[in-house]
Length: 255
Image 1 (cartoon, rainbow, N blue to C red):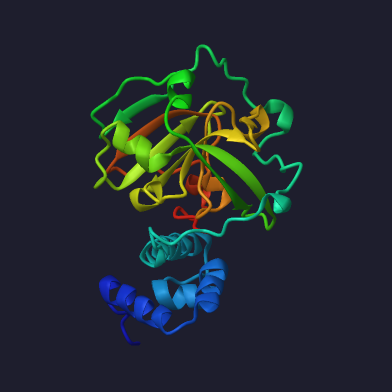
Image 2: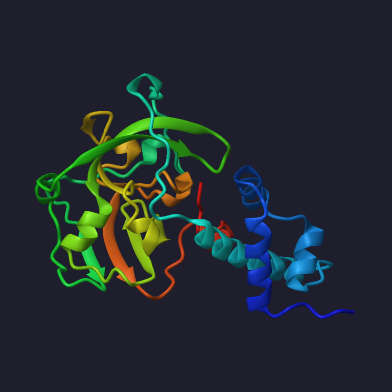
């Protein structure tokens, strides 16, 4: 039997193959991944037992992360929409019922900032609201198959990272939330011009159902990568994982 190419050569082959595909075809490839036969071919694993199948899936997920990161253009903007296209009411989405959404005391709230940053002071909500704000009308795409268009306002996350003296060459930015959710993103996405540290929705203070007091909004990522009820942000070179990612979801999570 022919041996599989080394990992670095396999990555190069995937990149070259994707260059030859038009953009819609690339997206279909990334969305639908591969058949089990393709998994077996690319990973060299027999899928006859559960452990081998899990190993194969983990390998293809890591490869998928690398391909998505390679395809990601940090300057390419996601589509924006007119106010007439806003979805009202905007759907609630979480791994629990709406009545279980955490109630955070606005006066006591402090956003913790840690890791590879020079300014580690904890931010109050008035301090965050005093920073220069912008807004966007973009589409939220859920991994469950639905989407909705909403207006989000807040602080450009790239400006916030620079404000706290973050190491912009670090690999990851992680988030811990009041509902025990956690996730992490790559630094190029953190610095994307549409990545927003969100304080408002549809022109009003961010409601509890959509993540009060603080949400990260990224139109370049699937919904589960957009953390709500954020309490802590950290910058790191150590892979932080995520709530759904640690349960088998793709880490890069590009939309």
